[in-house]
Image 1: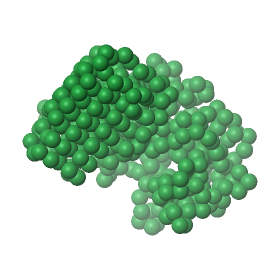
Image 2: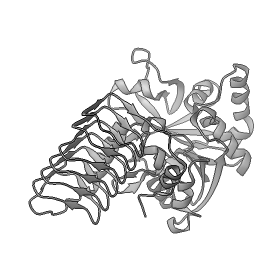
Image 3: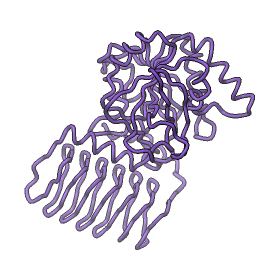
Image 4: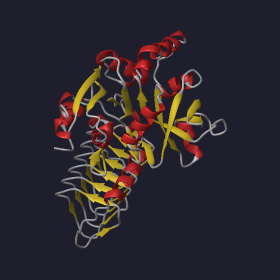
Length: 389
C-alpha cells in the first residue's frame, strides 16, 4: 500500500507564521510534523509516499527532496492553485492525486494533524483483516465541546453507521473524531468516488470536506472503524500549535543549563541561543538557534523562531514569534503571532497578528491584524528563508 499525505491547504488561520513556513513543516518539539508522519510510515514499511501540495509550498520539496534521506521514495503532486479561494478542496485534491498517480490502495493522511499513539502497522493490519473498502482512524475527544470543530462517527460493532460533520454539541451522537487517517482500497476510487463528486456537482457545491464525504457514504458502504488511544490535534491555529508543541516538549523534556537563569520545564533550547541573567524561561517554551533573550525577561507557553532578539525586561506569553524579529525592551506580547523580520516597539501587543517586515510604533496594539503589501525583494527574502538551515 502507498501513502498519500495531503498538505495543500493555505493555513490562513496561522498567518503570518505560515506565510514563511508551510504548516506541515512547522517544528514541533524540534522536528516538523510532516517529518514525524513520514518516519512513522517508513517504520511501518510504507516507503512509497505521495505528497499533495499547492504551488506555494516549494519548501516541502526543498526539505524532503526525493525522500532518500528519510528512507522513503517521495513523489510530489502539485495543485496549480495560488490561494485559498481557488484550491481544489480536500476531496477534489485527493481525486487530482489519484488521477495523476493511478488507482491503487492508499493510506490517506492529513499532513497538518499531529498524532501520538496511532500505530500505523496495527492500523494497516486491522484494515486488511476487516476486508472492507475503507477504514477510518477514530480518536475519543477528551471533551464534548470539541465536536463542533471536527467530524464524529457513531460506531456499532466496528462499523461506522452514522457520520456527522461538525455537529453542534446538542446534536452530536458521538465523541469519536475522524482524524484524517484513512485506509482506502482501489475499488472505492474506481467505483464510489466519482459518485460523490457528481452528487456535489449536482448541488453546485465544491467537494471540499472529506468528513462530508464519509457522511454521505456512511449508510451506503461499510466504513470500518479503528479506535486508537493517545493524542491527536489539528494544528490549524497558533493556540493549538503551542499546545501540540507542549505535548512534544514533554516527551523530550530537554532542560539545558544557563547560569543565573530560571528554567521551568518543558523547555527546548536550540544551539547558539543567548539568554541573559535574571530571565525566566518556561514552561512550554521552544527557542530556536541564534535567538537572544535580554536580561530579566519572561517567556512562557511560546515558540521563538531563529535569530529573534528580545530586549531586556520583556514578557512573552502564548505567542509565536517568527524569525529575525526584533522585540524592543519593556515589551509585553500576549496571545499573538509576530511575522518574519518585523519590529515590535510597543509596551503591549495582545491578541494580534503582525505581518512580516512591519515596524510598529504605537504604545498598545490589541485585537488587531497589521498587514502590509510585501515588496518583491521582501517576498523573495521570505520565500528563501528556512528555519532548518
